[in-house]
Length: 275
Ligand SMILES: NC(=O)C1=CN([C@@H]2O[C@H](COP(=O)(O)OP(=O)(O)OC[C@H]3O[C@@H](n4cnc5c(N)ncnc54)[C@H](O)[C@@H]3O)[C@@H](O)[C@H]2O)C=CC1
Ligand SMILES: O=C(O)[C@@H]1CCC=N1
Image (cartoon, rainbow, N blue to C red; front, side, top):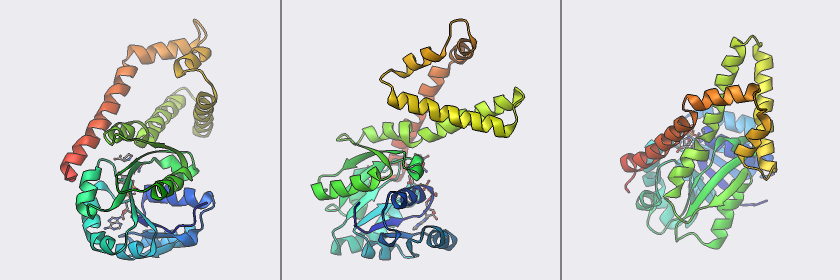
């Protein structure tokens, strides 16, 4: 387990997932610092996670060996400009998890010599089943690469990408991805109620089915199409359902949704970044 002090600027959904995941995997809460603009958020982190809190982003930079930028992309520029003067005095690794903000913008705001790992995690980090893509700028040394990887690997799978542009696609696939599965679960639950199941039974059956499908997909050497075929008895119930999905443009719809997410990531970098 790494013994570095990890600072989070922004203590919202994603930072909470990462902090909980790190603590669950053995990282000491004493070696985690978090700042936030909302005092109640900070107090709840102190009460529930027993991490160190501060209302001052500058204090996070002072205390930490690595700082994770976990604010919304819309305010990232202001936060970076705020901490930039301190970074000149303290050469530490910055890890940005903001969607759609590229290395070029981060370097402009934080200082050209700053070691920056840009990454795209997802909320299942909360249960140590996250998936994170990472990209390092040339200032990041091997030790810092290991440090960033250790933080994110504590909460799930990590994958490095040399080509930063791929992170827009990753955002559309795994960054936003949990929401797509939750949407499917919501829709299945609604349909299950229409079919006469009670809410409790429907939710349990759907959750366990999602878990089982993910587990089998991970553990099997077969493709999703082959696994689907194993459920689909000719002339049976699954065939009816799958044909209904396909006839109504399911595959095209998923493609359109992922393209829209990818395009939004690119658009955000143009609107909010300096790329
Ligand atoms: N939620 C998700 O599934 C994922 C989010 N991300 C990225 O993570 C970042 C954070 O997203 P969420 O956690 O969902 O947002 P969030 O809104 O839950 O958290 C942001 C936090 O920053 C705090 N904040 C606002 N201004 C601040 C300031 N000046 N200084 C310090 N803290 C301040 C807010 O009070 C809030 O608690 C975003 O950049 C997003 O693109 C990346 C991957 C997945
Ligand atoms: O919706 C968003 O913009 C962020 C990035 C990926 C997941 N949540």
